[in-house]
Length: 259
Length: 356
Image 1 (tube, rainbow over the protein chains, first blue to last red):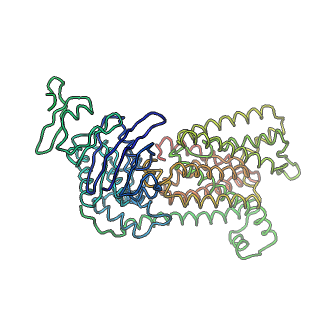
Image 2 (spheres, helix red, strand yellow):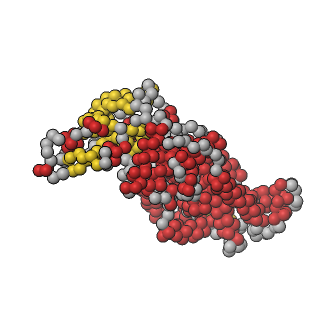
Image 3 (tube, each protein chain N blue to C red):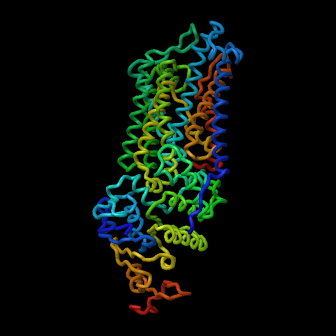
C-alpha cells in the first residue's frame, strides 16, 4: 500500500464538496478518477497533495500521515502536475530543474543537473531542452511538466486531467509515458480524467465520483453500462474494440437497461 | 521504461555561461558609466583623475571635494535607487504574476507623494528657493521624508491586508493598489487646491524625483535596505520561478505560495518606500527595467533579479547624468527624463504584446 485515503471530506466555506472518500493505491498502479464536471475531482487531487486541507479523514503515504507533513516533505513524496501551466520565458531544462526544488535549498548541485538530464533522455526530450516554454506546443509543454514531476522523484504522481488540451496523438503519447513510468519505476499515479475511454485503456482501476462521494471503485472488467449511466446520467453501451473496452453513449430508447 | 544515465549537457552549461557573461558585462558597463558620470559636470575631469581620486588617494583638493562631496553621493544614489526600484518591480511582477506590478501601479508612489504634500501643508516643512546660490534648500527635510515613508507603508499595508483577507490573490492586490493610488492622488490634489504658492511649489517639487537630495546618511540607509532585500529576493529566486509556473504547481513543489507572496510584496514595498521618500518619485524604472531584462536574459529569476539590479542602476545613472548635463548649467529633475524614456518604451511593450 503506497497511498491510503480514508473517509476524506472537504468543504469550501460551508458547502460540502467531498464526503467520506475512501480508496487506496498500490505500487505500480495507475488509478483514474472519473466523474462529471464539478464533482470534486480536482479538489480531491489537491487534498492528496496537501494544497487543500480536508475537514475530516486521513491520508497516508507509505504509513506516514500526510496531514502532519510539512510542505517540502509532501513535495518529496508526491508530485503534482497541474491542469494549466503558464509557460514563461524559461528553458525546458530550467523548468524541469525546478522539480529538484524540494531537494535543494540554495544551490543546484551537479547531481541535480545530472538527474534532470537523465529524465530528459528517458522521455526523449533532448531536442526541447534549451527551447523556451512559451515557444512550445501543448503536448511538448505537458511532457516538460511530467518530466519536472518525475525529477522530483516522488512515490506518487498526481495528474490533473493530463490530456485535457491535447490532440489524439499527444493524448496517446502522454498516457503511454505515464503508464510506462508507473509500471517501470515502482511508482503509483492518480489522474483525474474526462475521457473515460482513455481511462479504460491505460488505467488499472477507476474511481467513480458522484455527488462528492465515491460511487464505485472498479477494475476495468467490473465497469458496467449501468454504473456509467448512474454517474454521468446518460445511457451508454460498452463494446470491445480490438480487445479494449469502449464506452459509447447511445440514444435513450436504444439502450438496453442493465447491460 | 528504462532510466537513462545523466550527464551535464554542454549546451546547458554554455547557455548558463552566456547569462553570467551578460551580467558581468552589465557590471563593467555600470562601472565605466559611473566613472564617466563622476567626471562630467559643470567642471569636467579626465576619467583617469577620477579613478585615481577614488582608488589611489589624493590628486587635488578640488577633486576630493567635488568627487566625494558632490558627485559620488549622487552617482551612488542613482545606482542604489535604480537597483532598488528595479528589483522591487521585478519581484512584484513575479509574485503577482502580472506584468503591471510596479510601485506605481500599486499606489506606493502616489501615497508617498501624498505624505510629502501633507507634511508641507499641515506641518510647514518644505523647500525654499534661495536666490543667492540658485539651489533649492530643504526646510525640515526629515519631516517630509518621514511622512512620505509613513504614507507609503500605510498604503502598502492596506493593500496587503485586503489581499490577505481575500486569500492573497494577485488580482485583488493589483486592484486594491490601483484604488489606493487613486485615493492618494485625489487627496494630494485636494491639498494642492488649498495650498498657497510656496506650499504648492514645494509639493510639486517634491514629486520630481531628484537624486542630489540624498546625502551620505540617506545613501547608507538606502543601501542597507536595498542590500538586505536584494539578498532575500535572490535567495527566493527558486520560489519565484515556481510561482511563475502557477500557484498550484508551486504548491506542489513545496512552496508556501501565500507566505512567499506576502513577504515578497512587503519587502519590495519597503525598498520602494525608503527610496521614494528620500529622493522623490521616480517613475517607470520599476516597471520598465525588469521587462528589458526579461527580453535580454529571460524570465529565470536566478538571473532576472541580479539582472534587474544592474539594469536599474545603469538606466537611472544614465538618465541622471543626462539630466545633469543636457541643459547645463540647469539641472533637469531625473524623474522627468525617466518618464519621457519610460512611457514610450512601455507603450512599445504593450503594442508588441508582452509576456510577464
